[in-house]
Amino acid sequence: MAKGVKVAVVSTVFAVMVGGAGYGAYNFVSAMRDDGSGGVGDAKRSGPPTADEIAKTSKDFFAAWEKGDAANASAFTNNNTAAEALLTAYGADAHIGHVRITPGKATGATVPYSVKATVSYDGKSKPLAYQSKLTVVRGVTTGRALVDWQPSVVYPKLQKDDRLVTGESENPAIEAVARDGSVLTKEKYPSLGPVLDALREKYGTEAGGTPGIELVIKHPDESPDTSLLTLAEGKAGKLETTISASAQSAAEKAVKLYGQSSVVAVKPSTGEVLAVANNRTDAFNAAFEGTKAPGSTMKIITAAMLIDNGVTSMNGPAPCPPDAVWQGQTFKNLTGMQPNEGASLANSFMRSCNTAFIKLIDEKPLTDESLTQEAQNRFGIGEDWKTGVVSFDGKVPAVSGPDRAANAIGQGQVQMNPLNMASVTATAITGAFRQPYLVSPKLDDRELATAKGLPYNTASQLKQMMRLTATQGTATKAMAGLGGDIGAKTGSAEVDGQQVSNSWFTGFRNDMAAAAMTEEGGHGGDAAGPIVAAVLRAAG
Image 1 (spheres, rainbow, N blue to C red):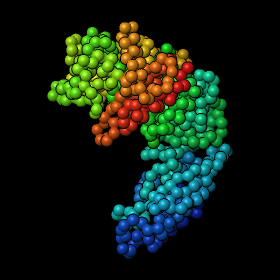
Image 2: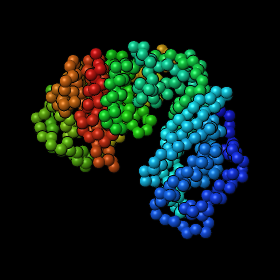
Image 3: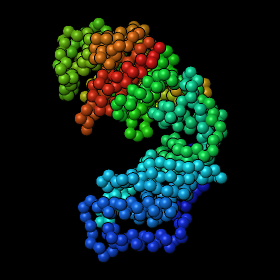
Image 4: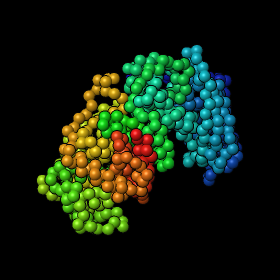
């Protein structure tokens, strides 16, 4: 196997482990005939399941599950095939036995329950305990009361096509440590879980560890296994990371304030990643792998393009009319923004005037490729970053038509994530692109991406405009109270099908740059802004 846990190939045909074949056959037939189950000869029932049906169906399902009778248990669900496969693997692949299930008080058709079991493999055993829930529904074709089958019925963290497997791990455990030598654990830093799993998969062997025996969740894609229980400890290899314990703690707390949020902090002088945190309903590392339109935070790159190509400068003209038309499409500013026909680029930048940037993108010598070239050649966007784990390095495609204007204000076809925008800020304030990384390239001799960066004059103007935005512009409220050398840029990105825009914010304080995104968080300063400010407070 390429990754994960080594297991023997197990037939998906389930062998009844307790009571013989007669028990399963008897209960399956009786289940079809029991009152409330819509058996042969009974009138097909309709409407929501009754309390008695919910209690009986869940009780019968639990009884069969406890006995290890996957075929019988699956007959009480609305997806026999999927249920039998997963329940079979529960015993055969995950080696979970001695199952005892205690139901709780039902809420409507939902029944909570606790599971106590034992995981045994190669002479090693450990207890397993967890809580989950199921919902009883009316079968569409049979009218029977059935368990609505979801993988989470078996284990709460299971998603579609996930499997539970116990065996010897191919990826030895790691002891990931922060830059101060403190140990980084999932317990102390919960949102680091997917990152630590990814680091283990890639660097477990390089770090010098030896394998143990574990119960894991194996995912259908190339995602790292999720470790659930260790039966026998291997030797953990020590892996040094660039994470700052104080910044990571601040990031963990900050993202908890807003759902579907992600944040990244980097050290501009080196490119080292200081913090990465996500607060999501899935295990997706959106901070590194997200592909969302960044809204007006993109204006950092657009402003750099305008300055580098001699279109205007920080104190040069960038009029802010109420609307701007580009090839038949009308663009407007945020509601309530006062037009300013005499605005400078700095003024339009700190107020985040969309029309000012759109009015300037057709000035000579700009072309359809200019923004793409600026992003790639100066900021390293799209240059195959090698951070140490899987990451998306941004996308600013060369386009014509209305999307050329939309790209300039961070809409259209531009795709970014907090890692990308934290790096953009770091490049903007130092003039040098230093590809972000989480693990030193010296460990595995990987080559980091390169870009030529910005002229000194361009970087100094961008930094000053971001300072003005943090002290006099749209980022003032979020950055209030932060000392030192500070700057920021706000952004909000409209998404089809969403009533509320995504909130974006990027900023710097001394030698730390950070960026955050909150899905449906509103304006940049509303949700993403406070997250970034909280992380920047950890900057020295």
